[in-house]
Image 1 (cartoon, rainbow, N blue to C red):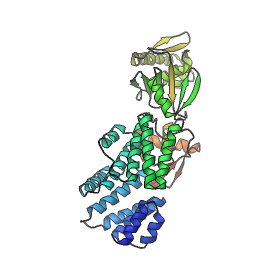
Image 2 (image 1 turned 180 degrees about the horizontal axis):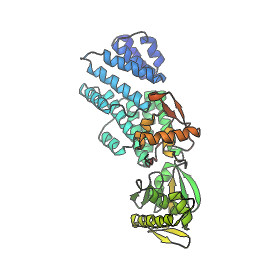
Image 3 (image 1 turned 30 degrees about the horizontal axis):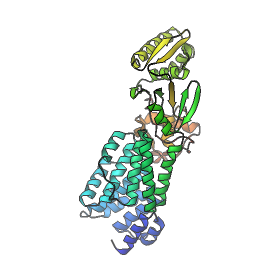
Image 4 (image 1 turned 180 degrees about the vertical axis):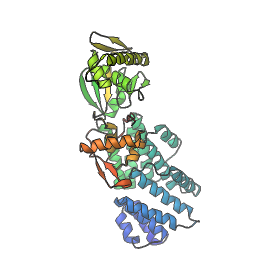
Length: 406
């Protein structure tokens, strides 16, 4: 690169896009196009940035594979910020391989972190952990060391391991300060705030309390029988029973747990599990069948006894029962949880992250828009959805049970 493009690249590395544009704004050679694209991305004009990066990739010659790979990595970062989670992962993998072979360790690591952050967003935490394992970030510049620690913290938070998450965020803060990049420092600060933000509600013995993530972690480590309404599971002493694909059984379990140590009446169970306003004999017969199925499913952690008016939950090996619930009981809380990160999501990206059909997600978005809880920008394929920040709603740290298919 010549002196102007070198100076522009240094300006972008220090998060000074206007300074970079002052140097290369009128140039249309391939390196300048790439730098202009990155500058526009830093300024928030992601659509223009994407066009410039694609022009740059086409402008680089056949012998400039490394430069094209860098353009692909930059475009992948824009896609991640834009929540376009269906972007071609194979192209990013190929770009990472090209950069590694060329000895461009920093950009290859950046490509790796983008792929891992996408996996975290769509809930594939095991795959994210595998890609991260064994990678040493020590030789990397401070900005990429901060990115590494943010990824480590993101995985730990979703695993409900708050101590390693806190340590990783402390490392990320130190690296971000060394990098002197304000947006990176703000990202680390925002992630750190999640540790002190109420992440869920616990309902026990008729009362409700908001919990931070470390308190949620402690709840699962205790001897309490936990009915987890965030993941649709039942947990006790490290044993987990998933009811994610059996919503009726989970609703019955939650209703019994919320009524504990008392019993839940048959009318309440029928209304919540079957939405039966006026129960007849067929509803009561179905309730007996479903209670029998629930007894069999949870027999290792609890029993269900019949009472005069309904049924009562009888936990084994513990004297406490609690329901862990999302911060809001909105019917579309999973969608709101993702949108609460402040980014603009497409419906296809939401569907991918939630493991639901796009039709189901679109119906949820329409319902939320009708109640003024979300808003859309753009039209057709460019349409994106946003929600105002929800107090006490830390994105997807406790997500999620799948949405009902439709």
